[in-house]
Image (tube, rainbow, N blue to C red):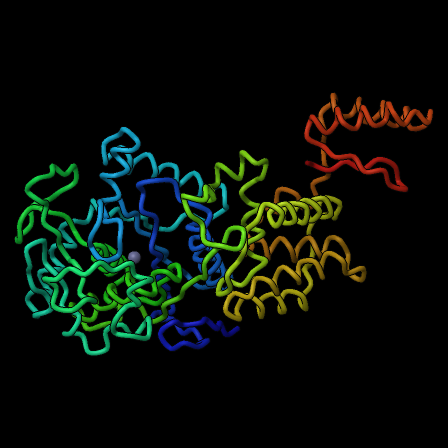
Length: 458
Ligand SMILES: [Zn+2]
């Protein structure tokens, strides 16, 4: 079936035609590992995961590459400000290298918590300094660079359609947080290699043909994506914030060095808002997977919440919306436990699901279909089970652990449930409530139904 994907370059949904039918190349801008990735960052990774799962669901082989930015970057988009890794090092009392390793390990753990499939390659920027230097040399040879006092810069005026991705040559200065560097020829020009300053001692710096320093903001992605996927590959993904500076600059580097647009399809997910606004440290609402857990939520509940909105729409995160996602997911788990073993799926539902996800990853439609399937009284449980089992390859909600697996509780819980049944027979409601609370403490919720007590996981 056709796959339609919204391409930020063409600004419309295009039919996806792989460059090479045997292997689709997908590159995702990964985390900068100087602190813990937030749930806002994870919206971008969950979106990329969904894309990769959908392509594979269509029978395509995918090589998914996500970089780990472990080299010092500067705290603003204009190659000014403080180095994030060095700053993190000072704040967290570890070396820059330890900071990077700690947060890389943490990132892997969080990916598992959100059920994100592991990318095939996770190249680190610090392992690819030579590739970045080589690429800058090509750009230099082709006349796209110039050197000023603090580094080697890309001359954006040498690229004929520079900025096509964001729709303008000059970035929006307010949004890009640009502080003018007067030595630059054009304000859109950006650093390829920054020199270490004489006054400070940097923990991360390397020799280069231009002097000791470190790579600029954007060169690692172009160097590593081309190394892993070739000079032109299928799909590049990232958050919508990258559409303004990072991705136009990546594309310029590819155009200047290899004459390609790097990727054919550029896809961007919208922001995650928190309580109706942007996440910010000052508001204390930059939440992480660990904080979701501390609030009593399995991070996969956040995945469910993400699926309820289209990736190109802003999504407003509140603790209430997460609680609503949690009760929906619990209900779903509870229902699928009662189903018989999977048998033959429903072809009609399966076609409709494929139509939804192949239509630019329409997950709200896919989630609506899940509930339509669940509530369809004309279908046997075994058929629903088989269909949902297939869909979970895309949804990644971990439903296989629940489908046709009746809840088994410990003897301790069972004794309390039996005691509660006796208390209710004796119409001792107070005792019934006490026992209900004890059962809740052990992680289960009791519902009184016409068929007796029904247990579900809290
Ligand atoms: Zn990137």
